[in-house]
Image (tube, rainbow over all chains, first blue to last red; front, side):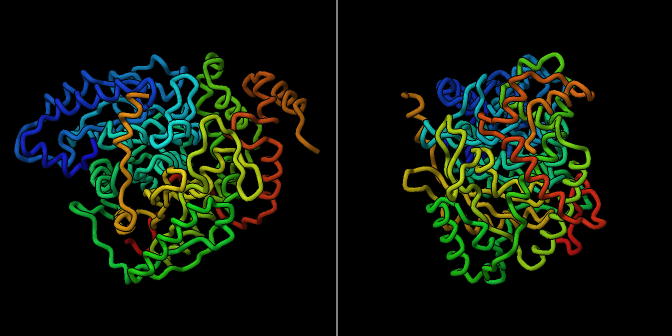
Length: 459
Length: 71
């Protein structure tokens, strides 16, 4: 299925049956799941019951009958929720996460719970227990994580959109590597209640979808209805006036080591915007290596604090990589954590000042395309980096500042792997961010990997 | 002086930490999983952070504040 949400709505208005579509998609997912590893749990009966209970009246939400998938760290009442870990392998929550409730109220149909890096504790999506979701374009490469299954399900056309979480890039990275759109809204725009936490200070709930417009439709349905916040547009996205746009780009030094094809796509984007009349202005950003250190100083102790409830009795059920990451948090000092939280405040003030001079920033989403499954280190600019660090180099800062950030597809490299561009907006200006993303989407167009489904089927 | 496994073992033995296996501590010092930087390299980076004078900047709130001029 490669239909947009708008096309699905027109189909349902014309009499198409949401239950039949949901059943078909679940069956297609089940047929390839041993290779695609997109889902941990498929919820066929639940989907059919939800479709049967839809109000058939004329007033329908834009998400009425639209099939979606949720990362397996969102609590789902009566449906197993593992967070990608053996630790929670048999956990059946008694409530829905707020975001799942909002989607149910909007008439969206949950097809299943998607695979992920265990407890969202990494950007590769590697999962020794539930299997590693391969890249939809090249199955010997990573789909990216931690929301790996959410990306693969959308890219292969097994769901119209999916929910993910993003603590350092876990929506934007798999979206970039898999060739789809991934949005991390402003912190607080979407409730994290009912989500298995990784790091309270940095966790965001967001969306993976095929187009920017679809992403906007879902965001309107799941956003917190807070009258104190700037509203999201209720209908179509605003059309930006490129001639009035000022777009910030990182100074050259920050782009050192970015893969040449990704750099070329980035330059194509800035050329396009300049051609449309936008002003492209170099801006200073914090040292991204330093920012990663600050992020880890917050992530590791917070993650350990949550997992204290399980570690004494279930330590052996964790993956080695996750357990060692939790051990990392044990040996940091409280004063370092406080210092990191103060650095975050400094980053927020600096970025807010920068975003008073420009409307948005553009960066590559990742410095590299999808690495091969099993690679643990990559070379960037003559230096070896852990794969996870390389993937999140450009994304992690904006989890600390809370700014909305989106990754959109920007073509593929010479080897055929997708490239993602990241756009970062002002705090709470999610609508403005989506409008600029939609403008750039016109230049690059969406990527369509749905025809790759058959390769997984026949692999 | 680099962090040694013995230092981590002593901290784990003498302070109210969780129990960590030899393998967990070894992975910290010589990471192979590709998820995190080695602990020693990380400690060096935190030394650099500690030299930054943050003045009276407070801790960040959980959520960012809306900008002065709302979009």
